[in-house]
Image (cartoon, rainbow, N blue to C red; front, side, top):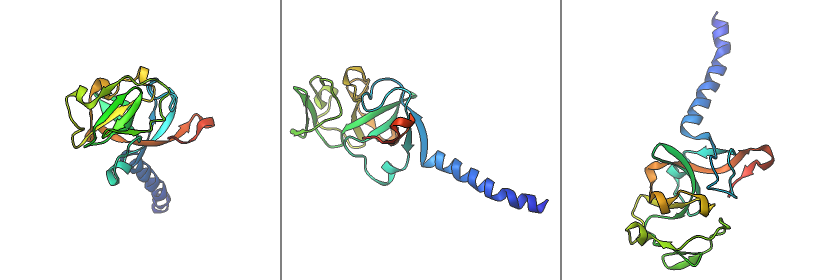
Length: 168
């Protein structure tokens, strides 16, 4: 009996490690909808990294998973705390300087942070957009995103197999 229990120990350790990894570090997430096309398509599967943004800083153009009214959304960070954001004539301006935004083929309608009632993005908040600007409920609609509502970042697609790899 003792020998059989000893044989089970490696399997128990593997199960515990997998549970801990999935709970605290990395977990699969499914793309739902068209808001991130052409970068991400509906039903693709990605790995959500739950720890990267906690040990480092979120950066402009990171793809994040966030919770808004109990719904998981996948969006791209466009502007960071303390920044002024504006789109004018389909050009992104951060702190009144032009920034290249190659993630959308759509026309991004003019708007600025003032449209949301701020001069700059407050600390702990982020401005996010979907890459499919014509079909995305993002910060233009739902407002700024609190850091606490961000579950993590995604940068690796594992399904479908013909598209496996790093996502930018």
